[in-house]
Amino acid sequence: MLGYFRKKSIILDMILSSVLLPSWQKLSIYLLFSISVSLFAHHAFYLYQEQHSLQRYLEGIIERTKQSVFQMRTSLNLAITNDQIACSDKDLNSLRIALLKYPYIEDIGRITEDHKLICSALWGPFTPPLELPKQANIDTSFRINWPETNGLFAKGQQRSVFSAGNAFVIPSPATFTDLIRHSRKTGSVLYSSKKQHIYRIFDDITLEEAKKAMSYSKNNVPMLPTANNILTLRICPAGFNFCATAIDKRTGYFDMNIWQWLWAILVGAFFGMFMAFSWAIFKSNRRSLIYRLKYAIKNDQIYSLYQPKIQLNTGEIIGVEALARWQDQELGTVSPDQFIACAEKNKLITPLTQQLVKKNLDDMLRYLKANSDFTLSINLSIQDLSNPSFLHFVERQVQQRGIHPGQIIFEVTERSAAQSDVLKQVTKRFLRKGYQISLDDFGTGFSNLSWLTAFDPHEIKIDKMFIQSIGTQTVNQITLDSIFLLVSKLDVKLVFEGIESLEEVDYLTQHTPNAIGQGWLYSKAVDTESLGKLLKNQPFTSTAFLTNSPD
Ligand SMILES: Nc1nc2c(ncn2[C@@H]2O[C@@H]3COP(=O)(O)O[C@H]4[C@@H](O)[C@H](n5cnc6c(=O)[nH]c(N)nc65)O[C@@H]4COP(=O)(O)O[C@H]3[C@H]2O)c(=O)[nH]1
Figure (cartoon, rainbow, N blue to C red):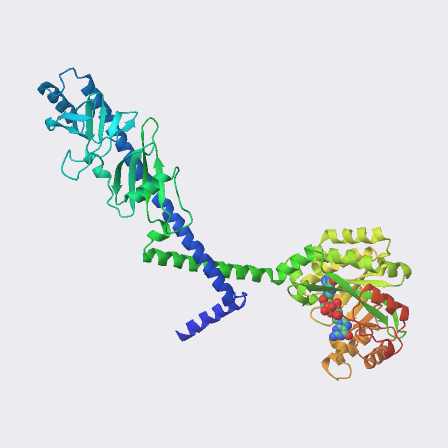
């Protein structure tokens, strides 16, 4: 069990260590940001829902008011066209029949020109007549209507009275009963379209709140949550003389309960973490070797430095080996062993080699032209060689610059036995075109004798580990001695890599007088300018020539 958890934690450690984890400061910023975004999103979401619910509520009130208006208009018309003597029994009976037909009307009766109610279907004749308040509103639908009328019904009750001709109606207070929400945060106000008169206030809305809501000529949807802002929606139906505004006094944030707040914070925190880690992974990927290498190739940032190859017995520079260099903004100096392997693995080697070949030919053109014995060694990967178009590419580049193919040496390394057959085939095509082939890193890995017999390289490069073994009496030194013996029988140039001391030069020249060498004793890989100086000052005859040029 313990082992299981240990294993899990190792895997987690591995995952986490491969990602650039965000710092606590960054994580807090992400969290703060996304919690705020989440809260705002929740606010907007609830606001949207509330707006929809308020819209439905308002439409309900508008629809019911239209029905009520229709019933009032029709019943008033019936009363006006009734040719009975006003307030007679017959008149009152026909008014009662009308009253029974229209459920949104509470009472219907007769009114005099000076605004006195003289009888009604419910109450019969009023003796004396009931006087209405003087402040009448002119209403296009009903000619005259009065606002709340005190005293007609129970004490304190108010009714609106609408009149036309010698008839009046009182709408039923039960008209909207089923629409009332009994809500403490929403409500609505019904008023004349010119805002002269408030017909009715629904739910728990104060007169001040109703007036404030009426003051908005359009819908008021407060996206930014402030405590004083109210959500209001207004509808003024065409062909009618009234408007209704619905109000929501506590919206979004202000209406969220503790669980909704917690949920919003949790969602925000989750997304904040998610964003922070996604960004960290994205950044880690951007910093990855493969990403940076693609970027470097695309932006032509990889270049070559040139390490002189020396004829050891004379100290003369007979050519150079191009060695790729890459200085990345993010990763710093990356060794060619690393990035070449990465390019090979990710099928980037062909574009990279092509870029480098062009640069190498351009850089060395003047030296190649100045001395027809001067050679340029270029490292190739097996993928370059097996790419059928690569030889054509090289041919084009070499011909365009008027360079003799024999001055170009392609260094190849056999990295697996399986590559042997391919190499045999392809290198022959290069040899036929006049290029030289050099067998690199001889003695290491798969570069061995079988290779030598498979085809005839012009040159064998002995790996630096053998040079470093000189004077050590190790297996490598013994191998080096056998290489001398073997190569003396073959028609092939021997190039020793990694020469760092005069003793090594002495040892090598004693065994192979025509040996060629390269190493830090003479020079590290240098740029074209420094190479020019080295060429001027050659031959290397003593330690005085040894440079400390940067690699
Ligand atoms: N300790 C020591 N080292 C010395 C001395 N003289 C030279 N060297 C290093 O030995 C390596 C020789 O290159 P290589 O065997 O072709 O091995 C090369 C070659 O296989 C590959 N490479 C470099 N440039 C290219 C390129 O343009 N294309 C391809 N395909 N491979 C390249 O990367 C390998 C490593 O290149 P570098 O890091 O530049 O390492 C170079 C060079 O800097 C010395 O006196 N002492």
